[in-house]
Length: 107
Length: 121
Image (cartoon, rainbow over all chains, first blue to last red):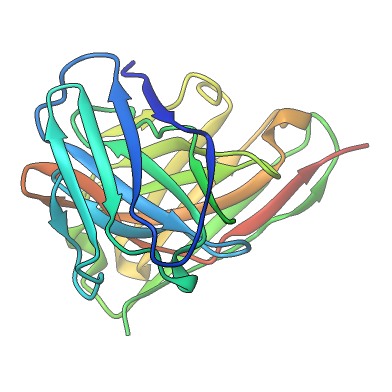
């Protein structure tokens, strides 16, 4: 199975900060990488698929990059509604493994 | 409105069984592959099972293989997860999720609200 490792596991940031989250796959997954946002008590929400394509209605302050084994999620200017947990997921082959999550907290 | 609604969760003793259901609406259910994922309290997401649009291909996480069975009824727009021989470590919120193939990447674009399964004596 492909293992997905995110870093950091948590971070503290202020409104307006630029935030980056890294996801690494245990083998090459081309660009088949998805990012999700989850708020407490809610289901995950698809943010980015194919490493860099924003899902419909996702704000442009979110962006994704990378290919092969290393990927980055960037929030260019953190907004109050962005405080949440972010998960990466490989869409390359079953099982569709997730990273362990990165919790973005208010500094 | 495109929607998935899970049901069937609850409190069950170790070794017991539950059948989880997921009702789909607002889209042509039979055209989509579907998945179950779960999240233990305070933990991350774990993919559990996959079923193809026709139901002929299924996959399971090693942690549930031989205990859980995924199925679907396209005539009823419904997805199911039969969970047997439940263990304490199966305690989690169970989500159904629609899978789409976009930009070559299989992603889960629609999720249900989740149903809680608690395994405890």
